Image (cartoon, rainbow, N blue to C red; front, side):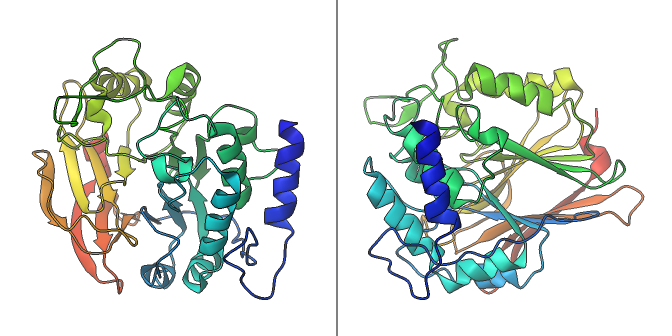
Length: 352
């Protein structure tokens, strides 16, 4: 039955052609599919938190930058439902936006999910419709029928581009399907869960992550739908599962994996965080969250480098391969493509 459902969805999403948008139904507009990046890639843009009910002009600015890839990090729509017809309709609204179609024409677009497109606010393993939601997600994002992503629980995946001297690995985690239920204090703030059985990734995804970090690459961009390196603040973040966060640090050490940086979303603002751990190079986490949603106020973060961005934003990792020691730029761009934040490091700073 599951395979039949996925097949039917592939027909709905992949073959349906309409000349006008019916955003009150599950119909989708045609969605261009850009080819794979070729050769060396140097501009990886990303963003998150985009309501299907709002205009998304920032995507036109992203499309104009001629990126090699754009990564959706979650809350790509605000589904928040157990009704799969509602979910289909909301994806239909996104697909019909001309600015979204411009983005799809401009570069390779890939995605993972966060809670709202998963189906339930702050949800994890307990969400009852995870399989149905997964099938719709993968079909909407044109995941091939033969993809490994369809053959395991969850939607985690990875991509590799470039020759051995310029190889960029993009790893997209699934922080919803397996994640243990969050715990709160008396004020309903999320607090650290130090139970050794609590998990963010689950056993199978952790084993996959270990193998991914053993693959050869110069730069490894790990996509995390929630923030990885910010300080504890009562919201969702890896800090709610400190043993899992330390497990990630140790997994990087064990693999002797150079060149790891994180990109993240979720919090409706943009910032760069930095964690310094023993026997590990500094770990950076560039957050971009605000395609249509804004927090409006700063959320304190003792691990932040530089300024916070409270305006609409998208992020980018840009690499200057021309230098002997390649320079990596962490950038945040605004509504019209203007640069709102930049910080750079050299690749050698991400080596053991």
